[in-house]
Image 1 (cartoon, rainbow, N blue to C red):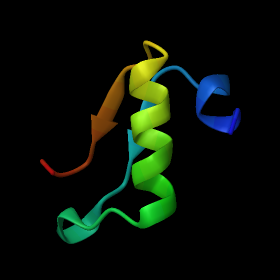
Image 2: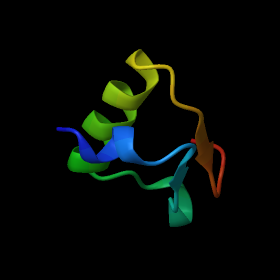
Image 3: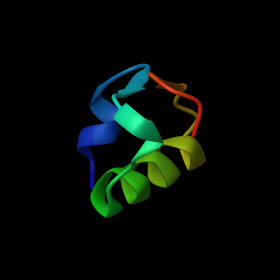
Image 4: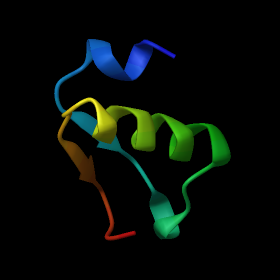
Length: 43
């Protein structure tokens, strides 16, 4: 799972605060690797 590491920061478009399973795991992986995660809506 290297794609979240290619971007800096990570932008999450979570309409209605929904985050899919794949995005959720990517967010966790990116966070563990020091990437900034920015959400459209507060999760």
